[in-house]
Image 1: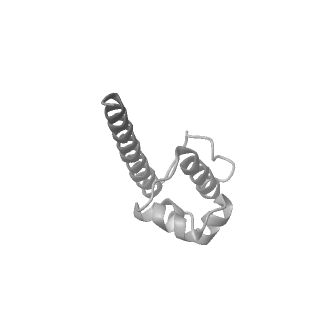
Image 2: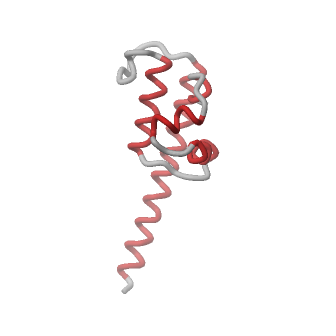
Length: 98
């Protein structure tokens, strides 16, 4: 988990985002989906702690542990995006039947 790799608590991440630590926990457990904007804010915040001054730099060394966490997070986001797309398609189909 990227947050733990950076040595951050849920409370610290929550304070930075202006949300509750409980909401951070829901994101981590997959009980709630976050927006891309929220994900990017978290990613930049944690990346800045892991690699100060390079939060927006996607080039350079990353430890295998951090890389595997990023891949896992990106796969979860992709799944969320597909789920949202399926819901939109269903709404379009349902609306077309009216």
